[in-house]
Length: 431
Image (cartoon, rainbow, N blue to C red):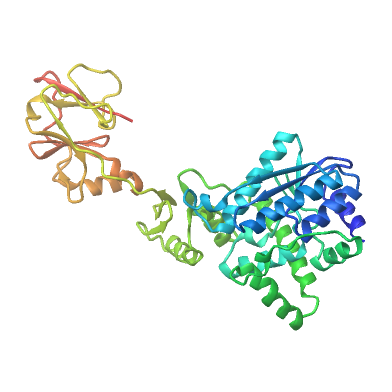
């Protein structure tokens, strides 16, 4: 009965055009051998592709040799490779299983491209969908985990996704399809095997037919997620972070936040704390992510990457500064707008040594030009609404230990050159 079921799945879900050649990921196990058999019966030219991961020693090599011989006898074109997954552990992060899956998928995709084949078929079935959902729920998940295993992702298609493994085994027995069982599929050291051999049998005893119910639920979740993504498609997170308005106007702000942060290593338990900080406008609150910090600013959550303190420059009589410095000091008028944010005119007589350009520091105080009294540089930057993650880039020019210019913001009293009086040094911020 599986052949018409798979034919219908290919047609309804648009997985494979009639008569199209397909690359079949062939492990030699029950599921992939049945998939190859059915696709051939449906009239699809097939190419078998087998990756030996280098994880099972002689047993894996024997499977590879057995498949090569079987494909020759059946007249099935055969592609194979040895991936040596253990060697990848020194150069990439992740579990052995994850590295093996990633390396295998990359090789399958590359092989399909080389052969000019558009689709790669894998033998994931309904039991895989259920096991994957349970595993995702146990470790905590979001949209990607709820949607389950997709029928199609890039060139990969999964024609057996609605088929229970019991039906696959019955088909293999009826058609006398040979296969080789991987001993690691029963190793309790792998959590998936414990779900397959311990948890699911218990669930089936407690609630016969739960497989169908869970599979339907995964289908409903997938449809809800697609609907949510379409409805929220016009709501974007900008390059500077996540606007408060986006979170506060969303019917499901936690979901929006989870999706925005899922690649940045946020722990699910942090989401509620972040949302509370936004609701109470706890400006300055920070949350650690894997690639930096998330900062609660005035109107949005901002990405804040860890930054090293900028260098300090000691300036000689020639006023020379390296190209990496955020300022140019010139004796000739560079032209352009003259104001405290752009080009400033400094009284040369006041710039006696030592002349230093450095990042501002907590506690720095100066007397603003045209103002009354002194103020903290930190207060100036708050009033100027400089985002917290950009404050570290602000420099001050100091003469004999006194701040002469908060670069790009304000001159200090007594350092502005008067028209027609004395020599002038022009200060120009470098963007």
